[in-house]
Length: 179
Image (cartoon, rainbow, N blue to C red; front, side, top):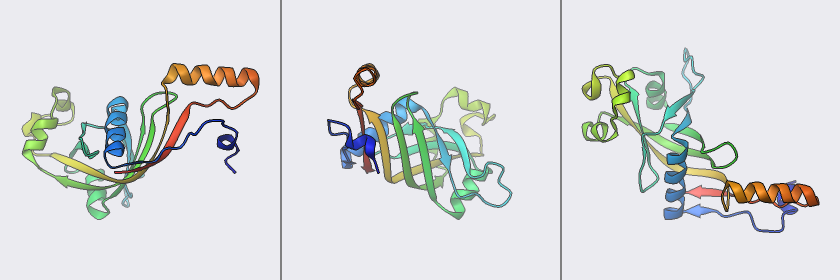
């Protein structure tokens, strides 16, 4: 099992904790801009518990912030079971992250103000004072990431060279994320 990693001449594993984990979460969140936000679906949910969501902010502690409608399936599902899973992809070939976390819903007016952007009026037609706006805070508890160590160009070069010489020269890096 895991023959690809065993054939690789360089170490491709690095677990991240504390500040390094929070930095990885923040950076990948900025690059991705959105995620698949997964909840435990309730009966009658059209989404099956999974939907795309814009990440409004990932703070210095790795906490992710979203805006949502109070009457959404997502909010009801979080109230019933606050465990969530988020899937992020920063680019076509790198920057993958899965996070398990604990979500809470609030009506924190200061946080809504901080996260608000004019495009939000598409969903919250009364603007930032729309009474339906809620804030979802996701505190990551564990996760796993896959990325490349030296950027897409170096990774592509190593892959091409490896294919040409028949050797695994993968520039990937992966590991646990423990905020």
